[in-house]
Amino acid sequence: MTDTVHPRRARSVAAIALSALLTLALAGCGGTSFEDKAASTTAPAGSGSGSGSDSGSGGEDGFSAESTELGADILAQFDLQPDEIDELEAGCLGQTLIEALGESDARDVVTTETPSSEQLEALSAGFDACVSGRTLGPAITALFFGQLPGAPTPDQSVESCVAGEIDGSTGQLIIGLYDSSESGGLPVEFLDTLDVCVPDEVVADLLVAELTSDGTFDETQATCIAEQVAPQLPISALAAAGQSDTLPADIEQLIEDATAACVLGG
Image (cartoon, rainbow, N blue to C red):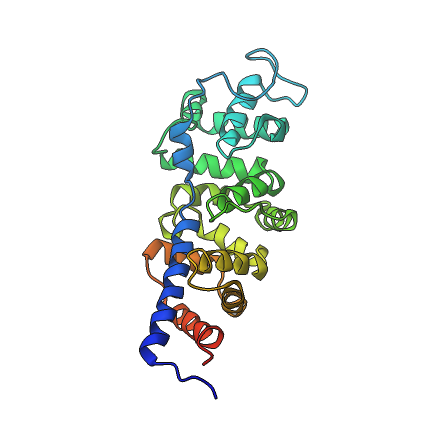
């Protein structure tokens, strides 16, 4: 005979699942913003990561050492290492900024916490014209995954998908990183890209880890809940929940239904 579950007990267990999901949202979607990176940058002008020729001289690519150094300093703010920075992209980015802003204002982009609208416009144009999705995609994907519980390593297929989705529009992400209050630290456009590129299995694994973290749910129960919830729970929805500290009613109902089916047998 099937046990009868008291309605209050059913709601209590579902509430625990809701709390765990919200914890995941809060932990996973408060990514480091571009201005945080800029504020922590200590490299003085002229000491960038680029390996161009002596100051003022142009390399084989036609970009000056100053341009390459400036572009490399900006790209390094996305945790790109020197060997991951394409000098052609760095030189192109730096030169575009210098031509648009002048050398002093272009260099100020590296350290300022409050860029002007003109600086933001120049950054956006420079990234769109010079920085490929192949360069920025893996770095910004790793930045997001690093904020998730356990800091999982993104699969290469996810990085490749993101790179393809943002190629040609990397400048939009730059603007979004400066104005990312809606997404808790990452631009809505990028979170929408993750919705396309991050498979349900990744979301499910994160949910299982969170739901089993305090022993309330065992592995089987958590896996059952996660498998029902993950296909209907895009990353952007988690970001919205993390930003508002609440879960939308439809997601609450989704969790409650999954909990009832997987834990309470209802």
